Image 1 (cartoon, helix red, strand yellow):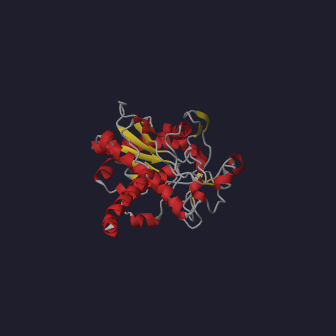
Image 2 (cartoon, helix red, strand yellow):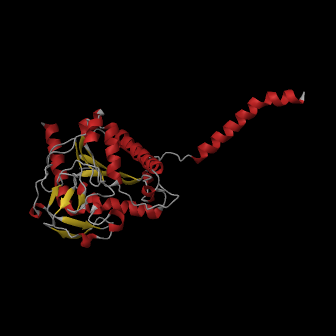
Image 3 (tube, helix red, strand yellow):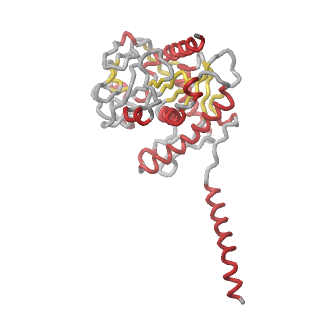
Length: 334
């Protein structure tokens, strides 16, 4: 009698155990970030009027992390301050002619790059999930058929390129994207073969394209961003050429060194010339001394000017954003 009760109860007990374990697993799963909440946007200029286009911007890495924390907590106020500050350093390039949208997202940490490939991939994938959800929310509730620019820097540029790989062939992106500005990350010939809808920029006014480059000294042969075995596809932000012809520093309309409030603390016209390296595809600068910009050498390596990709060419990029917007709107009007 007792044995029959025990055996008959087993399926029920297994069901209870399974449901209990499922609930525990679910409780450990982070909920998706709700982009219907204003608090989850660093910038949400949905009510701004008088601007005919939008910018969807993805912030670079500001979260250092540690051996246990590989994604940013977007509720941390200090990290939010750094997030907004890093965004402000580039915002002035884009927002003169456009509404600005920048979601907080659970970015991958610096520390994740020192971990195993599996941890690195999970950390980046987790961050991209937020960026993806924010972009889809923007398209559904804020875009309203307006032309838009995608923009990022460093990790942010990587996520922008991931968006284009996934959604770049969709009708709204093909018809409404003015350009994607992705300094501090790279695309390759292999990317283009796998995702033929990706179109690297070829001039200063083409639209529906990707602007990408990585700035470094002439003697650099490898970096944390562009490894020695990578051949990137770039465009020169001084000449808007894709060949290796050197652009003289006279074409540099102003390097601008900005702070966390977006203020330009120092502006230097004719700061440096640049050319595209035929072997690496990176952007080599001709008039910069590595020792003058050594603060991040321990992270990125001597002569790798990763954190200055925007600042060395600030005015040229600012002018180019306006040029591409005008070109796009003229094509639509015509």
